[in-house]
Length: 90
Image (cartoon, rainbow, N blue to C red; front, top):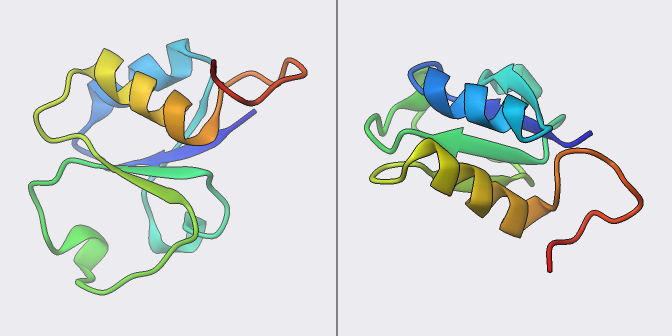
């Protein structure tokens, strides 16, 4: 199962990602190396109290997107939530 870290304020996005088969974890510095994607609200430039952080995960700005649109972007970037023999979309 693909793991996605979601900023605390995006509870509706976290719910939609769970419904889409993704494992959702709270966005914290210690999970950045353990997730496939990070979803940010785009509202706070100082996320997690840090202005400079790094991750190899795909970073998605949810500003202006519906929860369903965020799920689609996550699928496009990292594949489907449930492991079912194919992680790619399309």
